[in-house]
Image 1 (tube, helix red, strand yellow):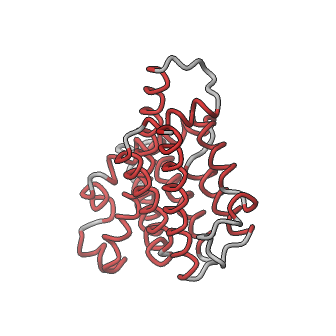
Image 2: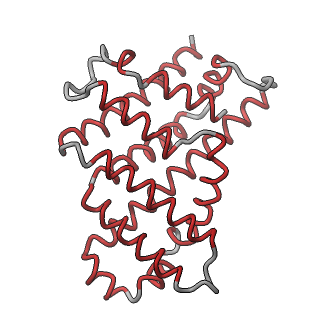
Length: 238
């Protein structure tokens, strides 16, 4: 299921396939499209061989991102955290939270698709047609929510100033953890480091774009995913 969704992304987000789309921003080049697609596939929707590591890390992160008090316990009191990181601290924590929610949404998305495939008695491996049929069976509200989560993620990481703050905070968290080996283990270290790595890759990618292009990226991703899933629904009805 993961391979098929990655293949779908890989096929749809090639410059050759989208260059004639009337809604493609004029600022998009083949380089822009290739970089965005590769960032998504390498960092946010990785291959099955990498997913076990990613899932484990995100599950570990849930206890920190879902409970800000744990983060503040590592940073020191709230006043000192605000003094060091400024009033961007809540936005920075929100960025980490959005990253986590997107991954959780992706897991639910896959599980629901798998349940549909099982109900239809599709043999493994699925064909591309069977995969698309499963996508078309998903409730539209659920599809919309998945797109909202994805869009929120790109919105969050497109603010490179806040992203930089988020990376700094996670770096501080990791440093504090390593000072308390009796409380935090290697799984905790690995989880925070993975978050730092993903956001750092996002910063490297998006810091080269101006605000206008970043906005175009978010808008086009929302449009493109909605268009694709609506086309599957339409095909199912016909």
